[in-house]
Image (tube, rainbow, N blue to C red):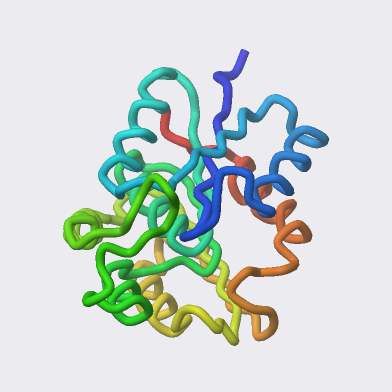
Length: 205
């Protein structure tokens, strides 16, 4: 019997574990891929805690397979974890450089910035995100990147330029319609799952 498959969905900034995309993915997996364990973690916590939480979750299943899907800031987290463990990942309008985006959209003078009742974004979080960015590699992981233009939140060209550097490991699709939230996410789930599951090369940990 094949080892169980876990799909981790990383939600975006100021979203939550039961986001619209996460729930759409949950319903799809329940209907078409009941053997896939979908994990929807709450990422409203400092980045270091996010990474530690995901690593602890994965460590519980040392012989299982893992895949990542992430949207916006969740795309950055998904990319980092996929790089760390050589996993397949799907990134939806991903943030490339989070600390730069936060500096531009929030402003450093407004830190700490309250995100939820239990977490405020602080300067030390930006420093940790910068460290994560330097550690990302594309040596073994396979990545599907989906970009919408226009993107009213992020500069999609930054993601284009970044991921084009790794074209041998990344497949990038730029759609000239829609917005950052990707309203037609549910329509694209079959494509995500085909990419992730066909001829699976997911690394076992």
